[in-house]
Amino acid sequence: MNRPAIAFAPTAIPGALLAAPYRADLLETGFQRLRPDERRAVQAELCEVGLYAARIDGAFGPATEAALVQGADYLVWSTRGAMRVDLASPRGVAVYLRELAQVRIAH
Image (tube, one colour):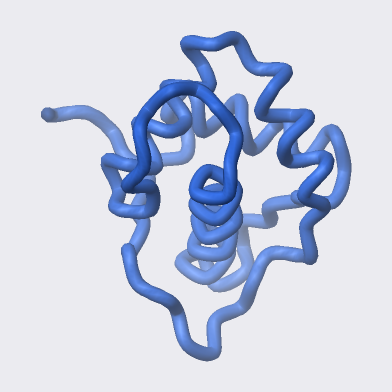
């Protein structure tokens, strides 16, 4: 598939700069507020970059949560902190998820 993708590495990043602490409740609420097709698009994008290996069903669960957090951490690390991902506020979570659903966070 030839399309823009998030530049993620599927492995842990030792000593990386990490995104700020996240709130699981906000991450789940933000994910559930997306349309069903957007939720599946987020999972598909995370799958495409090797962070999500579960079924693409639009449901929020431990695998989706872990992939979203790892993706945010990688974005912060790969930009050496220039890109900030706020997973501790409703607005920050909404922006991250929308951009991810629309594949706007490119390498």
